[in-house]
Amino acid sequence: MLDQSTKDRIQSDIDASDVVLFMKGTPVFPQCGFSAAVVGVLSHLGIKFKGVNVLDDDSIREGIKQYSDWPTIPQLYVKGEFIGGCDIIREMYETGELMEMLNTHGVDVNPQPVQS
Amino acid sequence: MAMQAHEIEDLIRLAFPDAKISIEDLRGDGDHYSCMVESAAFLGKTRVQQHQMVYNSLGGRMGGQLHALALQTRAPKS
Image 1 (spheres, each protein chain N blue to C red):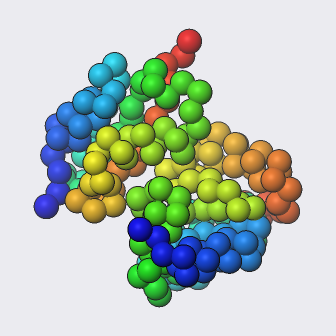
Image 2 (image 1 turned 180 degrees about the vertical axis):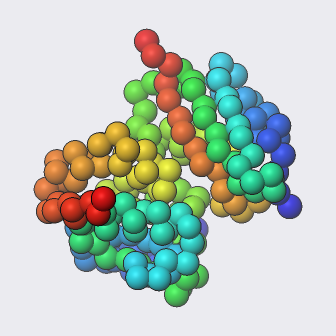
């Protein structure tokens, strides 16, 4: 069961930024391939986001899975809404739905120029 | 203790008898699979909901006994 104090801390993390990624490691040093993949997508799209390193706090690491009823990390939240984990973010990126969702959520998007 | 591909398929089929399921062992270690599930049960459901339905069919093994399952889901084209 998710205790109230952990839930409150998770909620304040989610509310602290438009785009929040619960991940293993940090955006600069991801410590898991799946987390790194989502960081890569967000960075490529030029999206500002807050990384929450679940490896720093076991109660957050387990609590976030109950909070969203989602068994794995990473987990992406946009304006408080759970969007998905690595598979879904990657699929949305490939189909263009990720940009569309960010726009409809009113998130500032400025894609980086792709180095050819 | 990792899982066998047929174990994963059996669990998913139990929950989705009509499903088309394809599973690939990405590294041959029984721990990294990709899986496509097509079922009418997904009609009208968001991707998150579809994936949650599959994870539920795996009975809590996702993220524990089963470390990596690159999952794709879809409803059959009507």
